[in-house]
Length: 484
Ligand SMILES: [Zn+2]
View (tube, rainbow, N blue to C red):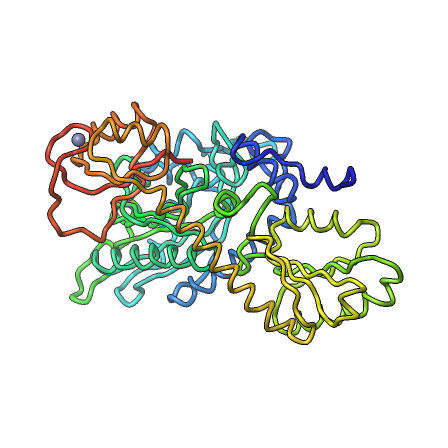
């Protein structure tokens, strides 16, 4: 191995120091870099290409369910934020303020949006007059600023990118239906495209969005056993419509406040990809989200430019024509071994090697990033084989993550068992809870675990048993975990 190859390959093993492993992948795969301002990151082209794929696939789903995109201002007047008491209390500790414009002191401070309910609510009050204006289904792709104390690239940064949907409805039932429609859309998206299985369910009042009636979320389990909230969908009830006076004339000519929802996923999903699928050689990207699905590396031996390169170019062209995102890495200044490591680090799902000997036998060698399994494939069959392998890698990554989730979801009957699992094994602990915040607080203090989701499948059925913490009669089944 040359010195260069080691430079690409060497990262801290995941089991030795998970946080360091995570940061090293981000840096070596060139996903992001630290900005000179504390808590801020620069998303580099490769990381941004992953985000663009997430955006495109999510945007398609948002539009297919009848939503349209718009764009609202970055700044929100302080008085707007203050209208909803819980909202301002929840967000004010992390708001960045603009107090001066040019050389003039502003009469009213402007918040850099920590979320957009307030400004959007104000605009909706101007746009909505009648039931005929409903439902109003708008999404925006935007940046958000929250002044976080502890930051980590993609998971929690002062500025991040997201989409936020904001909808208005005639009835409470419709708003609840929308909230769950999006929750299910997020679950389907993350499982299908990112190959990450998730739990979905309600949040407790303690964990809900500031200003929401109720919050629902999808939660993934990262490979260090900690949970990550990967998307939220809020039923806002009439909290914002009452303070922003968003009223409509209903079908019987009575004035009513609209029922609202809001929901979002963010660049945090890139962090989830790393922590769910990455290994000691770097990133492993699911093909559907990978900016480069296949890298073709001609083996530079002898007169390879004459003997190998034309065949490699033809193979790349054939794959591109078939809709595969392929990159031909014909750089002369790097050895094939160096290129292998680099593309492994970047998580390219499939590598094709073509050398002088392969040309003679009319074949190419395919190497899967997920398992490193190698197969020789006749050049004539390359396109169908690559396509089926990419599908197989997508499914395999999902199954692997699914098995991990199943193995790391445990049940606890008593508190000692609960504490032992959280302390020694982590993962999700499924148990019974009395519904009291006192127990949530106690558990958080004792173990740093919180309720990640209250599953909805069993709702309506009576819960039999006692709370894992206090021994009182249980009201709900809950999934606890330590979380990012
Ligand atoms: Zn309890």
